Length: 192
Image (cartoon, rainbow, N blue to C red; front, side, top):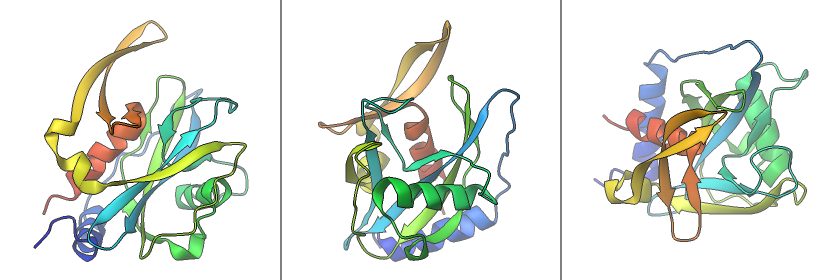
């Protein structure tokens, strides 16, 4: 059986996320945010949907990320934030997403606590990037990230502190930092 077959991934992730205790973080002075980690059934295997941020947004200019953003006063939980932001940024209809679970919260060096919400889409959605925030939306097969030859550890400096981060170079995009860390957490949850 192909370990990247969509129905198998959906089943394994649902079970593993439901049966694991996750780390929840609240850090003084940090903003709470949530992202949708969209797994898409593209036929033969699952893909992950990413966005490339515009050069005009306040933070993470030009970087690759998952759709998401800061929790606002109308959001009741991180899942609602992630689904709202994915709809605003790339037009994913919240009802088209099956929420499989939530990964561990992570922090970023610039003051965000990110809650990654894993969602499954049974078909490729009609992506409509919000030009004010998203320069491009694209998909990468999950198998690309599972191949150890495609990722590497790098050193980055932020705020005078050195951080070890993962990086993936797709040939066209570089996926690193918090986004790459989320991908690695997802792969870890796919283990039977």
